[in-house]
Image (tube, rainbow, N blue to C red):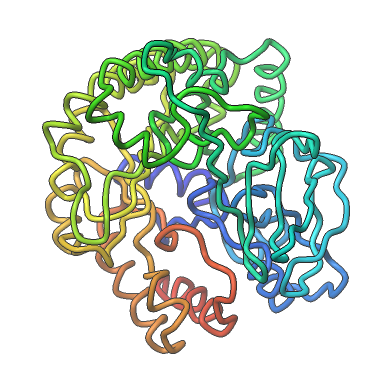
Length: 419
């Protein structure tokens, strides 16, 4: 099998010739730019090569085709025209991370230090606007800065929480169509797209890191309060977002078609380390009606499989996600309570493709021994890849300062699993 055939077999629950592998295809299955730089140097050399930071909010590195081929990575991402800070990934320039790693960043990447030595980032790279992101001194990625304006209950307008979600322009659709065609015809990788507009309540986007002056409910704590006391307001936001998402699905389905095999629908988290943080009843009331509409539109207009990202312990919610039309679960946080890999595969393996769960990024990969990493990876592949339906990825993004020897042990285990 080539990579695309392997990916398609995996998505259709057929046993591939070896486990399908992703690293970097989505914003939730990536790798820290500093860690990627060390990995690439170990695998390919090229001492002067600078990794590109293509997702500057989390400071994720772009996995280039040369490294993808060397590591046997099967999946590539079709990303939107702009990143989370609202500017395009173009006109790359040199930058040095706090740990000394030389990288490249987009031209719009504009930062200033504050009196604490923290790094402040700006929406659309506009340093005349209030900063929207903060990286702690010697840190590795940005946290959103809450810029919540005083709330006047009588003047709350759901439109204010939807301004960053819009119907793609003709130019944006054509750009994505051209990229998809190039990936489909010039490479053999499986392709996953990111669906614009469908991120219902995604906390990474809620503060408006790409907006100069965000309005509406923009504080994370205030948002979660709103899901309990301002339900009508939240419903109206989700209703409008769903209309936007469906319009984008219809247009992208015509423009991209079968060039893409899967799409990431939404990255909203529903789990904590120990349990879901909303009840099944709350999920069914707030989210389910809109997910059903979005997934139905995807399945009507495309052949794409749909991915739902949610960290944490979400076992009670998984049947509801399946019922709402989701076919892929990521990141499969087996380190959370009630997320045992054997139980997940047994109960949901015929309905869900598991994308992630390959190794614990909270404990094993960053802090375990190479032997522990190797053994855990082999065990997870044996469980999840039985009968297909498993895209190997770590549990969420590979973090900065992950030991290189542990990463090499992970890839060695992946390779050995095919023997």
